[in-house]
Amino acid sequence: MPRRLFILPVALLLIHASHPAQAYIDMPAERLTLPRLLLEFRTSGVYRIERADLEKGAVRYELVETIQGKPSQEQKHILRTGGKIPAELSGIETGRRVLLMGPDPYGRGLAFINGAWYVTTYERDTGWWRIAYTSAYFDFRCAFSGDLPQLIDSCKTLLDGLEVTVPCHIKPKDAQIKWFTASLRQPHRRIEALDPQARPTETPPAAARPSASQSATHPSTPAIIRSTPATTRSISDGKPLSEILAILSGDPIPLNRLHAARSLASIPRAIDQSLPALVVVLKKDKDAFVRRQAAISLGQLGPSAASAIPALLDRFTLGYENAGDLIGCESAAAIWRIDPSGEIWLAEIRLRLKSKESAVRRDAINAIGILGPPASPAALALLASAAADPGGEVRFAAATVCDWVNAPGSIAVPALAPLLDDKEKYVPEIAAKTLQNLGPSAIAHAIRMLDPGRPLADRRSAARVLRALAPTIAPTASASARAALQAAQDDPDDQVRASARTALKKLAEK
Image 1 (tube, rainbow, N blue to C red):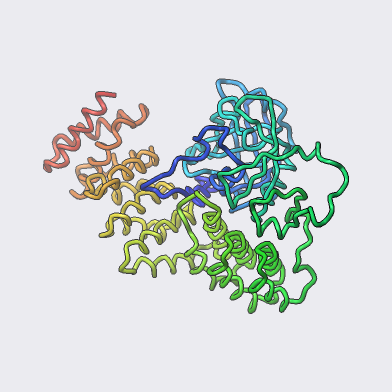
Image 2 (cartoon, rainbow, N blue to C red):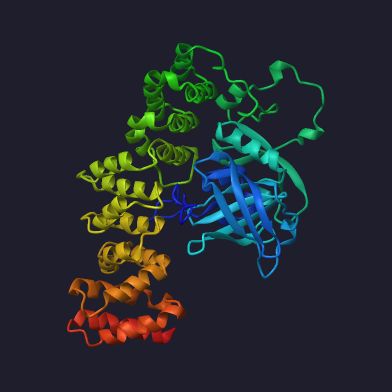
């Protein structure tokens, strides 16, 4: 399990760092929809409870099926809150399956188990997710209130661009349930629908029953008969490669092109033809869900699809407002599968960092965060260099990504210390926040750098960092920090002394 389980970048992906939008789960619960959850928590999978110790409130989950992105193979959760396990989670037992989603742009995870929702936050020092709250605090049942098989089926259907009709609580903590139709094509909208169990049992005439392809073409029409990717026979099943390629490039119905893109991943012997066709679709298809499936299929082709990495990198986005943003999540997962060592995509990043356009360099640095952690020494070296980039947006990205990949103090402190006094708006703030998030690693390294025998540049950087972090230094580290800062009062450099004085004053005010 990665140190930070980011996939937090597929992260943390993923809001535009300098102008974060309000998270969907921070909106009123009655405005939530299942599509909004899929947009915010772009990494999700079905997990099996491998071990549950209810006395300790500890549960270990193992991945059994990927829904979207690249979920971690294992997650460990602490479910005790206020000293006890919430009542709605008390029936947890080994072997039961759950849906785990996230993290979202703020590092939170979302879980659905036993018909109940709960939110977790990640503790990077321990590698555990700790429960933050359940539907008793924020009622996610307003987005979905069915059972697990129905939730899994609905997520898959939505991610293929189709509509679903799902049960939802009308108001938070209100027992009344209604059925609503929703779609990722219009994630902010839901339409009240009839309870499927209350509908006539006879099959409606074919003319009155929208097909899957019609639903994809006319997303505002509720799909009375819903077909899902798990159960629907693809139009490309059993067809020769030439016909599949023709469907992919020319069929007017998005769902048919999506099925064609999916089927190409299962014909690795035809990669000479399928690879360029999938890259074209990834770049040019008008439908976001078809482009998303092209990214997934490229990843399933594995290392033989290495030539697609530049096109996949171009798909990264830092928003979560609409279905088009889902493509970046799957593109990142595809690159992981194609190039697990990172050698190929890092070469592409280096090439982009030579661009004269600061936006291109910024996107290259963001890609390091999206594709980590853990970041390799080569990636960390690129981050350290980018912290001194002439472009303010590149420096901002470097500071942000150091947090995403959990950069060690030996990299983060010297790279980010100068940014604490940066003249570019938002850069000092994000640099301080990242150093604070890195916690003990950054503080311990700053204390070492403040040693009188270290070069002047190191001492100045260390004093700046301790000045910025003083209000957040934990009691366990405050004594050593105070001792180092007291010694720095005799430093021959006036900047070191001034920063040390300010840091000591902030420590005394805690």
